[in-house]
Structure formats: C-alpha cells, structure tokens
Image (cartoon, rainbow, N blue to C red; front, side, top):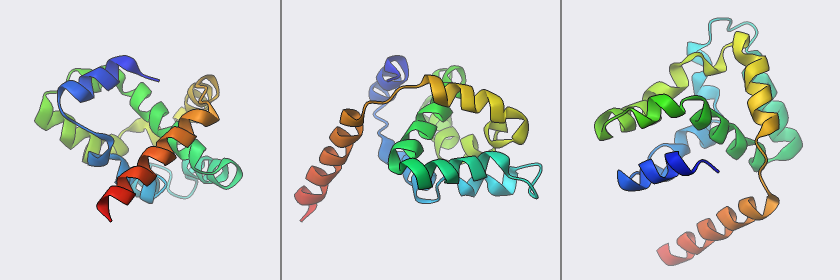
Length: 133
C-alpha cells in the first residue's frame, strides 16, 4: 500500500511487530492522554465506531493512514529515531486531535484496502502462530 515506507522499513530491518501491537491492542486509545479536548475525543470515538462496524480492517486502515500522514517524518529518521517515533511518539502527535478529524476521514476514505489483503495478513499471522507451536 505504501511502497516507499515498506522498502524503508525493510531496509532498516523493522517489522510491524515492533510498533503495531500497542496501536492495535488498544485500538489507538493509548493516544487519549495526549488529546487536547479529552471531553470530546472525536477521532477516537470515530475509530471505535469504525471498529464496531467494520472490524479489524478499519484498525489496519487507520494504521496505514497514520503511517501515510507521517510518511515524510518516518522517511527522515535514522533507525533509533524511527523506532522511538513508531513505538512511542507517533501517538502523541496531532493526528488524533479533533481539528484533524476531517483530514483523517479524507485520507481514510481515499485509501482502498481489498478484503483479500486483510485475508492474506490473517493467513500470514495464523502461519506464524502455527510455527510457534
């Protein structure tokens, strides 16, 4: 979906396992403490609505939107900075602020993910889990 980022991560030996778990496990709610308007976390509520309606596909798609939003920043990082940014800092930035809601929705709606891609990701995960047994 994002070949330049994909190649950059591969060249730096960074896999999704380094940074996706905290994003997906919490459904991005670990960004809540950094939201300016905590009484109205509009973006997080929207993400949770998407998850309820569309399941994991929406959570993966939000992750891709997040990476796309910060593509320039990610591509400018050295390995240490890259890991720190993806694991800790990325969820502290403006991405989850209410004023970015419309921009995020536009990115989300333009990003098309085929169900086959999600099925492939699930199959790959299942194979890795079988290998661990």
